[in-house]
Image (cartoon, rainbow, N blue to C red; front, side, top):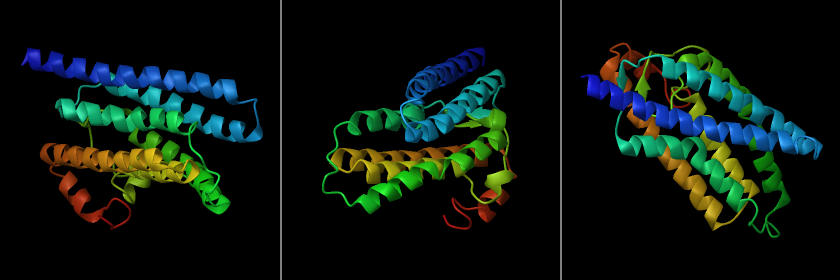
Length: 217
């Protein structure tokens, strides 16, 4: 039993530590770009705010012992990939895309979609609080705030960001990256739901009345 606890905590530390290091780098890069233009300023401030909240709540969740946890290595890889793997791909592909033939209206739609999720992400993080994790963990059933209308508001926002980046940086590499991000997020949320259903009997009622968006899915 003690060995299992140690391995679980090690897994949580690896996941949380990796994401924390990435968030610190993200904050540093955003700070460097704040003064470049108004667009960079409007983009940088929300990125910094979300990254600081991620670090804060992830650190607090590591202090708590979960009631249940998915220790599969595939869940760890999916968690890390959906948390910052797609962001790394965006950094790579955004500098190599050729958007010359891409309609300007679609690019502007992508910009709008990229800004739209930030208020919902911040709201969701405050509601999720100490239950924020990288690998699937069962701490408690969160059903208030945006979670009244979606079982996974954060993941919905991440999917919107994937679509937004595919519109802003057209090309097969970004399209494949965005599609992979959405598929991995769907796998991740299903694994979390399975864990919560096994751990909390009351989650089944919440699961039945709340979809991914409203009553959908």
